[in-house]
Structure formats: structure tokens, C-alpha cells
Image (spheres, rainbow, N blue to C red):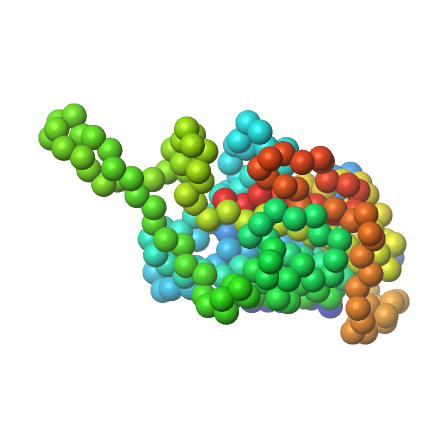
Length: 262
């Protein structure tokens, strides 16, 4: 089964023993990042940032982590202020379901649904190869808008205060440590009933901003029709999907992945 062609274009396939290698490129190449297993480099999940308004461009890029951070940081950019945006979450595996949450508040995800107290997406269970676009924050049921932040600075030439854009670096280096930007934390946890997928997460995981990837799938018809059956997910009680940032928390366990997006 192919990935959703609204977000990923399959550009090549090749038979490899009992598997099929599929090469994909992201439709939103500048604003997609992929979660890979560390050893086999298997693509597991993807996050896409989409600008909703015509003429507005979006980008996701890695950035240096703050000194007290224990997880990688990425930055989402829009080229126009006060613009609405959405997130697309994708299960890149055909081996089992994923629990994928975008959190507005750091939280260790061990439940199937962390709810609006922590997450912005109400739909978080993704079946194999499934993509889902999050167009509204479940706390308000309204579209998400990235507002431009400003600050006053003294201009030595005009001898007056001027209103200028507030940068992320300036905000995070403020003495009062008040972060003015919009921050999210990602949690991706595999279905405990899918041992093959859990094994990939046990390798450790890493997020990368990439324009494409290669994945290995089984030829059709699939050998495991259970993956197509709607059923509740089983999460390991020790599953760790998000790190509390700040303050820094322990590193992610073998069963989950975490990242900070700000």
C-alpha cells in the first residue's frame, strides 16, 4: 500500500529478495521531517508543517538546542506573520500502528489519548501508511495561527525606540527565561502489539529534516491483515514519548521518540 500522495510521491521501486524497496520524496520537501531508527535507518514517522494561506511558505529546519536541553530541537518557519498553519502526521511503517501526539505541554505519554490537557490533536492513532492533517487545536477547535512577535529596541542613530521583530535566539536568551514563541513537543509511540515495529524503536530513533527517504515493504497482498483491522492500540506502560523541556528530563526509552519543535 502506498503512502498518501498528497504528502509523499513514490518515485521508484525495486524488488529486493522478499521485499520491495520504495523511494519517496516529500511533496512539502522544505517543511517535512522524518523519524528514523538509528541502526537500520528505517523511516518510522513524519511530521509536515503546512502554511494554509496562498502565498505563504513554510519550512522546518534543525536548530542548536538550548544548553539545558536533552532532546533535539527544530524550528518551524513561515515567511509571513499572522498566518494560519496545520500539521500533517504520518505513519511511514506498514508493520503496525503508531500513537503520534503533538503536545503543547511536555508530558510522558503512556496513555492512548493524553487529551486537550497536553495535546493539540484529537486524532492520534495512525494505521500503517496513514496520514492525518491537524487543522485545528482541539483545545479551542480553531485554526492555529503563528503570530509575529516584536520588541522595542533603542536606535542609537535616531535616538528613539523602534519596534523590531523578536528572534528566537533573543527570546531564549532573555534574563527572565520567558519564551515568547510557540513551542510544541512531539511524541511517537509504537503499538505494543506490533513486535517488529517495537524492535525498530528499540534501536533508538532520530529526527531528520529531509526531502525524501527509502523504505522497505512487503509485496501485496500483505501477510498481516490484522494491521488493517480497527482496534484499540496497546501502549507499553513504560513507553516514553516526550521529554519534559524545560527542565531537562531523562533520555527517551527504547519504546518512544521525543523532540521539541519551537
